[in-house]
Length: 292
Image (cartoon, rainbow, N blue to C red; front, side, top):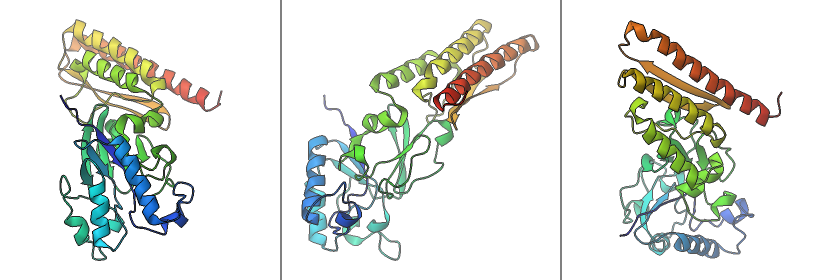
């Protein structure tokens, strides 16, 4: 059985001589041909022919259409283009040579894709908020050439970012440094999601992936809440609508439906569990930032 892997990179700028001057640390080459070949070789090392390769904008700067086509066909994988500013003509239309390349699907300005760790919003430009950002989705962008610091679950995937190594990376590789996790962390998130599925919404963008420093706190809180709900036999009348970390603080938001009066006290128990978990996370945040 063949498994398809998704890979992400932005800003190759094929045929753009000025990039040697703009990015001397990541592109220490004597010609744009040498630079382009290095990017192509890095991609061939990592991407198989049936894998998906998402290119987050600024595919090529060259005005030589034949050279642009050459670079495209040298890259392995089924290629998907998220349009960047250098992929467009001055009137905002897609450059003809770019539009006519055999992309796996038509180039688009932004899109969402599903990974095991949740949904990922892809665009050439970095956003402060994006679809599902308040529900744990991720955001990959380019354009900034490592000059735009990440916020929340977003990050620059341009090839000039040091950990990109002048080529594409997988989702697991990209979020490893973002959340300080490894593959086992994502397995823990999935296991907890299945364990407490009865109190989670059906929204596909919802995710329990938070900073690993807070995950054990979240895990214990949700298990306690789930036990209360199951024992009271009111599954379906309660759900956790949102779990997020903002400015270093953990937020857990519940929603109740049609609760019998005799279970009002349970709502207070749940509020106490959530309050304790958020206070624990807050304490970790202050300790990590050196504030006592």
